[in-house]
Image (cartoon, rainbow, N blue to C red; front, side):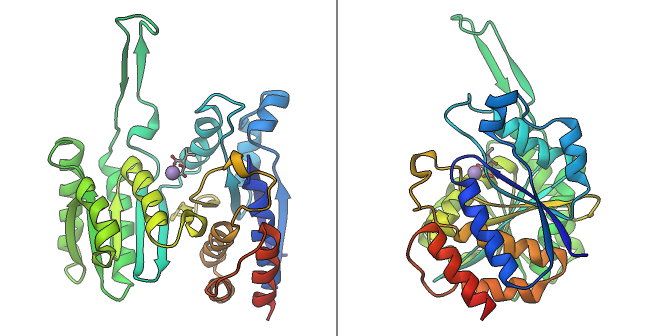
Length: 324
Ligand code: IPM
Ligand code: MN
């Protein structure tokens, strides 16, 4: 009866790029049944729903979620990001965010921890708006959360040609969290001696991303470093318009979610200039995870040659290459 895919177009260019990604998925001939979920800034402004428990429960029943982008200048920052995107990542236990970067001179993948770090919302504010205002926002790192992410990265590296994994952190300053990450990394490394390891501080890693990305095969890092590094990864490896991602629940206790790395780009909405490639490649990651590696490989192959034109032209062109 085919795969049941929940589609959240979201805000800005999200719906535009997701339309093209679905066009390409359908061109593979894989049987997918899509259900649209009207979520994001416009929905919030209409009736106040960001993501209700009922909607969340409904989403749990799907095989995968394909998401465009969230966030709009019409709603204060954080409402949709925290209430929709991060809620999905946390509630569905999408504990790794896998972000591959492939382009001339680039072939590495960032495994970003996706449920902890400064993203959990620990902290608060006192005396807001006064000269004595205090704001704290802690980074939460659990042994379990770090370990499952690090294990995922090692397993991924073990299946790749160089078998190389780099931990990126800031152990020289973040001596509590960094120490936990380093010790867990070392324990897993000792279990898998076939995998070669390296460690870079995040500031140095951002130099190497630009000057010597060939150092990397698999990078494992925390939620916030991973967020920042993957925008940089997109920028250096062909543009953020190509950067795809998979928010995975590797235990498969629920659906995983696939989304481009880029944001909602409200400045170009409706212009037909959004590049759907990142969404299309995210859909390929979805097919891979669903157990359709051949269809996924066909999509990736179709995305190799340059295509220029409007959002829908690019989608049509890739879809026709895939349909072959
Ligand atoms: C990303 C985005 C999100 C993040 C935002 C929209 C909350 O930047 O997926 O990289 O910070 O994780
Ligand atoms: Mn980001």
